[in-house]
Amino acid sequence: MLVSAILYLLLPALQASAFALDQNAVITRGENKPNSTTTLLVNAIVGKENISSVECWAVEPGYQISAQTGNNVLQLGDLSNASYSLWPNSGGPIDLGFHNAPAIQWVVMLTGSANITFPNVTSNLTVGPGELFIAADVAGTSAIGHRTVGDSGSTVLQMPFQDGITVNHTVVNRTGPCT
Ligand SMILES: *[C@@H]1O[C@H](CO)[C@@H](O)[C@H](O)[C@H]1NC(C)=O
Ligand SMILES: *[C@@H]1O[C@H](CO)[C@@H](O)[C@H](O)[C@H]1NC(C)=O
Ligand SMILES: *[C@@H]1O[C@H](CO)[C@@H](O)[C@H](O)[C@H]1NC(C)=O
Ligand SMILES: *[C@@H]1O[C@H](CO)[C@@H](O)[C@H](O)[C@H]1NC(C)=O
Ligand SMILES: *[C@@H]1O[C@H](CO)[C@@H](O)[C@H](O)[C@H]1NC(C)=O
Ligand SMILES: *[C@@H]1O[C@H](CO)[C@@H](O)[C@H](O)[C@H]1NC(C)=O
Ligand SMILES: *[C@@H]1O[C@H](CO)[C@@H](O)[C@H](O)[C@H]1NC(C)=O
Ligand SMILES: *[C@@H]1O[C@H](CO)[C@@H](O)[C@H](O)[C@H]1NC(C)=O
Image (tube, rainbow, N blue to C red; front, top):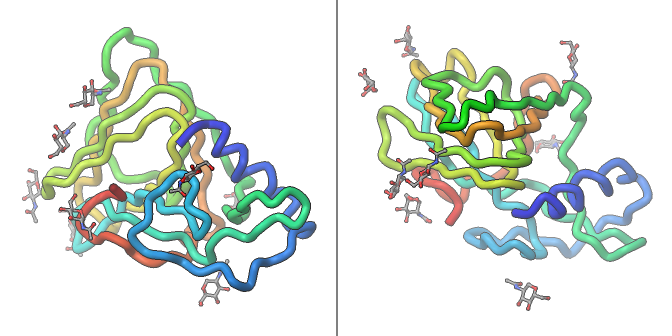
């Protein structure tokens, strides 16, 4: 997903009240197309039975259609505790080691990329520049968490969900990322 696509999602959300709902919007599971008109498919790092892994989620409700511009608009919720982080610029890959998500949150890789692996499962997640995903394997849900190895100097936006409650969704794949 391109950075412009993120802005496309974020900026219109600020003016949500101006938009009309598309009552005919339906979620089609198993789609992962950049211009899907139904909803966003997003990779989610979760803790299940004390083990972290990646799932593919379809965000609910799906896109609303902007009456003003015709854009597909997805509400991300109250992002008022969002933070920006800059990873060290060491010249080589940065190994953040095994850790739990600090909060249940949206994460946007603004620049750079990262490989995320899990000690107890074979599926992994590669996150590229401009990609939106969810990190939810907070302490108490996963003994070890996930391991992140990213590009030096990557920049990341972290946006905790209000009250630690994830966005409504259906799980499209319980054992691997969106393909
Ligand atoms: C995405 O949009 C392009 C340009 O409008 C179109 O050619 C393509 O078929 C669309 N793809 C999907 C999966 O809807
Ligand atoms: C998960 O992996 C860790 C590290 O390899 C290991 O110590 C632990 O026993 C594993 N847990 C399970 C439930 O397999
Ligand atoms: C992630 O999994 C794919 C498919 O099994 C594998 O090719 C790739 O090397 C893995 N990446 C990492 C960083 O472990
Ligand atoms: C999860 O793992 C941690 C660390 O090994 C352990 O203290 C805790 O009791 C485990 N929780 C569950 C529900 O198994
Ligand atoms: C992520 O994994 C890919 C494929 O294994 C590799 O080419 C890339 O350098 C890795 N990225 C980082 C930041 O380690
Ligand atoms: C932001 O953080 C404050 C302080 O922890 C908390 O009271 C508030 O509920 C949070 N707001 C959101 C939207 O997460
Ligand atoms: C999420 O789903 C619950 C249960 O169906 C509903 O009460 C709640 O309003 C939904 N939240 C949003 C933001 O759609
Ligand atoms: C779910 O992900 C796993 C691991 O990547 C893959 O083998 C499987 O085919 C996927 N299932 C679906 C329904 O996409």
